[in-house]
Length: 277
Image (cartoon, rainbow, N blue to C red; front, top):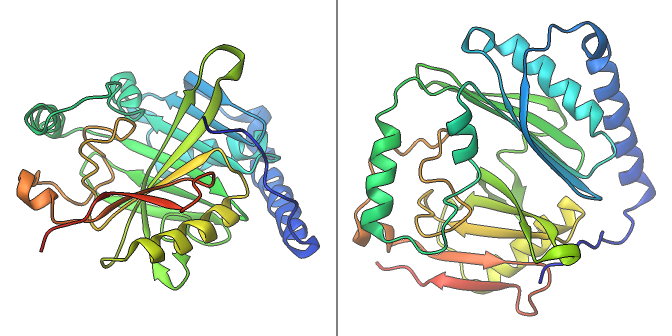
């Protein structure tokens, strides 16, 4: 079972950068905490010692870049002492809940394809995600016309990390409680796509470096060459921020390697799929 331990303290210089980030977020959010016409409705908050995730629903009329940015800085300031923060903002409560994953542990390809196509037919999808880890925070927005934009709030763009020289695309993060009763721990599931095929050894080295950047251990890392995490329980049927619109055939999906990596795993990463040529 994944624990909720915090990794060893970072260097003095790294901690100083984190302090600067927290002060910057407090300054950005200041004018809006007391005076904003806040029409956001929280529908779920998940919080642990080092991380937090919040789902918000706002009126479609408020889904504007400036409103989203103000909400982003407000909540980032509220959670400024945490290592990992995500705020997901939707105009539809069902879509917001969909972002948490499939809610079932066994999905066939045919079932997934049907669920994906049903959601893809909804053209008026508005979604935004604020993500903060390490010393950086960014905002990703999908507007009703399908256009996607990304705004750096502090530091680097968290959605496109370069780790061990590999340029990754972070396509989704899910938060779930794992375990039972008092032993239940909040776990973050990261999903990233690779620019090329890598070996298990490369995946392990990349994952260790990324975990160090996150600074917490109750996380796992999922890697593919594409964004089709079809059989993963905690990945949504349809990711509104995905650039891939046509669902792959089962044979096409099998072409990619797929890794699951955790800080507690001795060999680093478990390879779900070897990938076909």
